[in-house]
Length: 281
Image (cartoon, rainbow, N blue to C red):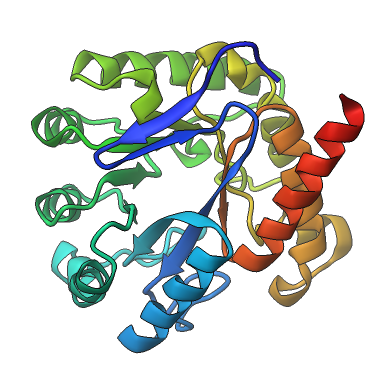
């Protein structure tokens, strides 16, 4: 908990996340995502899902046109954007006030998304290029900047230092092109390591507490990740309970934006979390 107010803000939204987490729903529009590839196979299905998830309290909806699972097959910017645009057009028509994000590390797709009115860019590479920073400067979106372990030589003994250096740099870079900290969400990148070991994932989860030093909104993005397989030999259909328990732990130590596939269950988690906070107080 913190005595200072924490807001996540952007064009058309201002979420006070000082005490209570918010739900950030994942809408993968890909055939090959690790958990829900091919699930959102029709526009009407996605529109119905958004309507339902809004009733369960989801505040942000993130579109993704390319899988970023380990060893993913890259695709062209045209194919990636071609997957997203028909859904985006339909969503914006039916839900004109919706807060939308896109999960992309592709310059051309990021720019098309910004030109189309998407408010949040989630870059798994942490805006690590001048081209991306120039797009941020031009369009002034809100962002999610993630520590991608695949881009670093991760070592157990120096991982926290590496992450601290990364977040200091990425926040400074984003502030230098016009963003405020309340526009910048930071994500420790659980599950994004070439080694992909349980040790790295648990270190990143624990590091959530230290991330409060950056005074920026913190994302919890562990939904259905493979740490549950390494802990319990759980396949993707049986990872919900460990996911929820670890999300509750990360919320307790500072995470406030919960990026999830399972919105209804996450709403129940947040309600339980609030009761737990009342008991502690």
